[in-house]
Amino acid sequence: MAESGAARIERARAVVAQLKKAYPEAACSLQYGTTHQLLVATILSAQCTDERVNKTTPGLFQRFKTPADFAYAEVDELSQMVRSCGYHNQKARSIQGASLRIVEDFGGEVPDNLAELVSLPGVGRKTANCVLGECYGEPALVIDTHMVRIMNLLGFVQTRNPEKIERELSEIFDRDDWVKLTHLIIDHGRAVCIARRPRCGDCVLAELCPSAVR
Ligand code: SF4
Image (cartoon, rainbow, N blue to C red):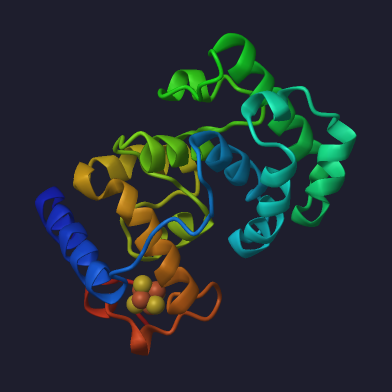
């Protein structure tokens, strides 16, 4: 029998409750001191592990201290410094270009709304939502690969389109849980619901998950 909207919302609440119990420390694993630094770290994290980014950013933030330092940096130097994160030329161009717009069009402050954030070079919805949720306390859902995979397994969505997933999840999950939800799902994806080898036997969501292999 198809799940009713009310039952789905109830199941979503139960999923969040279980995950909060399992991962009480779930939080953003990128290290940063300022909103601009989080923006830079998030750009670097595309197709790269947070661990690798966290090894790269201390030296980077030591060399370039302010948005203006990044805005007027030599892209080649920036590119060499972020080489280990992959796609380094593209990421260096995005970081320099976004910083330049922040300095010249936004008075040196990272914008606090989605429309302006996604207008920055190299900043997509995922990066923008990460900044809004972490630094500006906005209810924002970050749809990364773990969210795409696990939300499909949990049967809350049947699509891999991040924007559609964001929209559909926003109707199911409590706004107050949106920011935390991504961190909980990332922790669960790393520890238990691992890509291609989910450990359903050890999963706190097994009773709530239509994909559980028993
Ligand atoms: S029951 Fe299995 S498929 Fe479902 S969330 Fe848990 S580990 Fe993933």
